[in-house]
Length: 116
Image 1 (cartoon, rainbow, N blue to C red):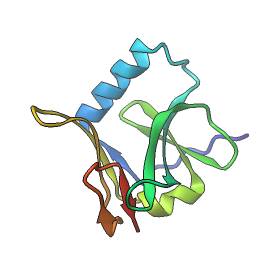
Image 2 (cartoon, rainbow, N blue to C red; image 1 turned 180 degrees about the horizontal axis):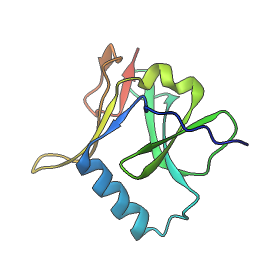
Image 3 (tube, rainbow, N blue to C red; image 1 turned 90 degrees about the vertical axis):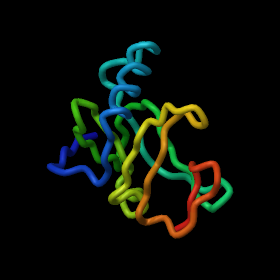
């Protein structure tokens, strides 16, 4: 299981997202060999939902480095995630990770599912 590091990741993490992810990783004692898994799965209001969580590198994964954070993506998910920006919103009406995906043709009100 070889890790492949590419020069430019297909996604972006804002500074706010990086800070929140580091805090979560530290609070939950996530092992050093784990990275942030970003992906998609079938389901959700609009057809696909986003995957965001800490995990180990598996076969068919690509590994990127974003702001000191190891980011893991399944190779086949790149098509759906190319150009996506993940941010952390901490406002009066909304708190959590937001996904700005230029490839999504339709998104739902929850902001965590889309169709392509």
